[in-house]
Length: 455
Image (cartoon, rainbow, N blue to C red; front, side, top):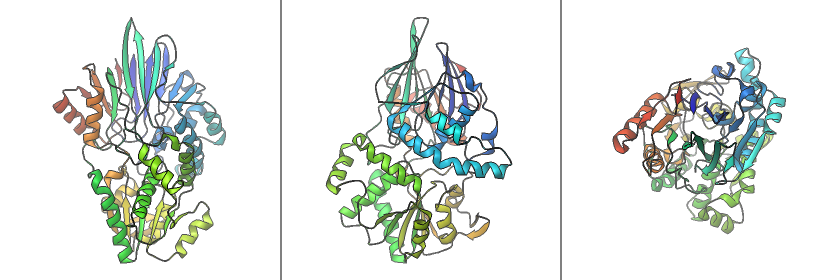
């Protein structure tokens, strides 16, 4: 069995792993590489393997840094089966078309042909096969795989492979991104206990989130402060999970009589479409979320909430007087409608920008969060005078303690031989590896791009 790291090695984005076992070539994830731009120039390089030789692709979840190069994989010759959970397949069918315009515009700026086109996207979506959790999939006599809930976003999956070679079965787990339980919406993590090998993400491998009990208080404080100042609260939010969980939190504040009277706009066509998908799969929510939905008569029904799917509706947000709240994509301010609102309100000292998700190094969101005094948006110099706030506990990613708990649970039974630390900046990945070794006695490796291991 051979494992090669073609993406996600000492980098948060671009997850792409090749497992060769049982006579099969199996990819896990084929994500977009992101950094200072929505899609990095590295994406234009040919894939470092023969796409036509790949038998299967397993998708851990529907974020673009895990699915964004799937149509490129098709363009370069892949015609195998793509396995994903049923919600992941449904969200991907909405999320990929939403990226097409950005793929085309970025290619124009890079002076490159687009990474993929509509035909590549549509044909690759036809290869998806949605599967339920915990039902094993047999690929051949030597290889089977079981999907487990990673608790990250709706449908996110830990793929646990069982590979039999020379009469011995070894298990390797690919968790994608690991959740930050307890979630307002989702069930907890279904740990692959007793695995021989596992990957583990490390986006927050060197830090800890605020306590869960503090996050609602911090959100309410940001809302009340902006309301008192008469400003605009801008929240760059990922369309998958962060927007839905944030709205559910606001719904709870409204029901408790705590939410100030100010309009809330969800200005993200993708988030609106994905919220509809969440409605289709609401049976997969946890018991607490199910109860809230029953009590409120549906998803996100508090009265000051407005969805603005069209461009015209989005522009009308400007007509609404402050104070107001604008939730818009993209989550790292790398594109989307949040840029228009940042262009308008970053210079307003009464306003606030609130980050509730990971900001990758080099992204506009990261630069604002790190305190740059001015930024350029659509060619316009914008001074940053608004207040800047961050609530890490709303992240869908586990922090260092949560990642250590994943490794501990996976190592239960004493079989875990090696843990590969991926999907984090190098310092974060190494910090997690060092702590896992010190606290758990687990041998951890921080692989380099293109590095291969025989297991």
